[in-house]
Image (cartoon, rainbow, N blue to C red; front, side):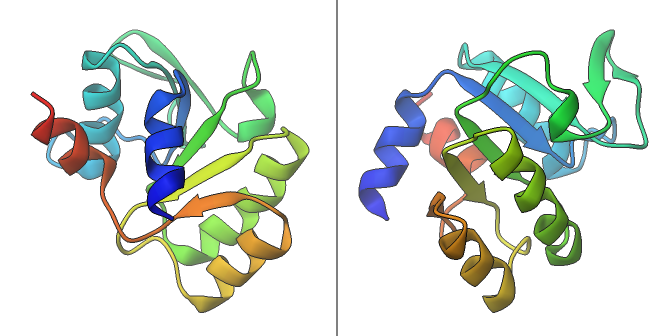
Length: 130
């Protein structure tokens, strides 16, 4: 999995599933941190149309272009559904934030052929690079 981590960090097109306008939440912090590090980053959350003037998509299927990495910041139940959408959208990499996965989610991600990472936090990794 460590190899995938470096591969993912090299990719510049990301989507954060579970983005939120709540600034104290990781769904917001990760989205902002990716942008600060010059990643082209989209947000997905069916509860928002926009955050800070940026369009937020209700599902991965609505994204305007193919992204390389999907960062999961949603509960495992929603992560399971999002994996199906990610497969349809031809996304290659999934980064599961702590608390977003369980055994069923990881098995499904592997079965669908994703390159996955689930023992690290992209926010912490990018913060260390500052």
